[in-house]
Image 1 (cartoon, rainbow, N blue to C red):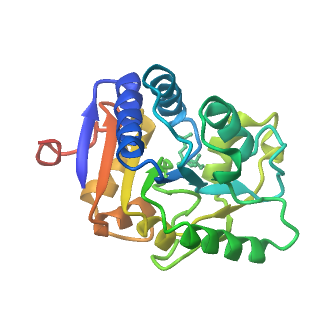
Image 2: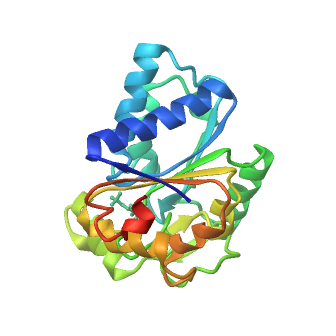
Length: 247
Ligand SMILES: O=P(O)(O)OC[C@H]1O[C@](O)(CO)[C@@H](O)[C@@H]1O
């Protein structure tokens, strides 16, 4: 895995946005894999700025998000669809009908998961997948224990993830306990992967991802088997890495 250590969150956001913008410039019909959470907010802000200043054109691109909470419709302010509209889609020229987020309020969740996998395949697969990382090493909502061969499915969120995400809701009881998430296999099928991590709370997970054994207990460590992963972390998230890994 290629490692980039940035001086701070701003720099991380700029470098990540540049990478995505370059990809879209090179290949206008890029299929983007997108992530939510606090970490990519700065990258989306920078990507909007690049779109406005340099006219990077998203009109032929399409996107698939990693996950969505079960039970929330796209209109719910804490849904990942609403997050994506607000943080990116409302500000760039990516046609809304080419943006995909799982439907967390689908009547038949199993069918929705199947439909989502098929839609990714029909689009020709994901060209570049953006990932964050949970404090426990999760990617997407693939919590510890997620097997290598998992595809899009309904997952149970761990209490640590529910606690971490409670900051976006009025009370912890409102945080959904389940989500639809791309699986590990879905993520590993992307042609390129860019993982972002910022802050000291991520240092241990980042260390295991890069230096630890490959294990489902730390789902991000399974990325070691992918041939094209760029990990962009700020100095705080890199704090537990050995000198050998840093160089
Ligand atoms: O960027 P954050 O907010 O630290 O979240 C990290 C990870 O946790 C999630 O938000 C889910 O809990 C993922 O979507 C994200 O990759």
